Image (cartoon, rainbow, N blue to C red; front, side):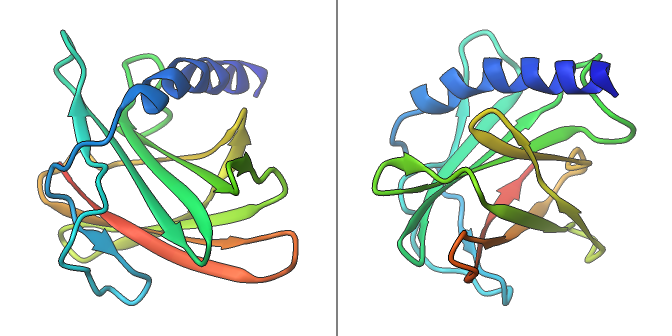
Length: 162
């Protein structure tokens, strides 16, 4: 268990600067809402390819009920995969520029074949994380439900295309 925690901590320490440097680019990814609907616009963050890296990095920021939520998805590197998980879903929730630390977040992915799975996210540094198998081609609907310290629940999501 300690080894898994150390591996995940290493992933997050490496991913955080990349996520912060991702910038404000539009790459055509759509928003997903908890009811499976999509908006017709992109709010400015999409997938990014890092120089020399064959895998893409996905970072999208959304405002959900006044909270700034970052959705970050990246391919899990060999040796950092747990089970059949191919990607790491990372979420950060902020309000007024400050990270919310006492948040509970559940995630759900609906795969291109219509099957879905849900996982609670685990706190790792400034991010909350879960691993999913997103390696198959197609559009994945990624949704979260988070509970803030005031006891209120909030939901939203994005689409990720492999």
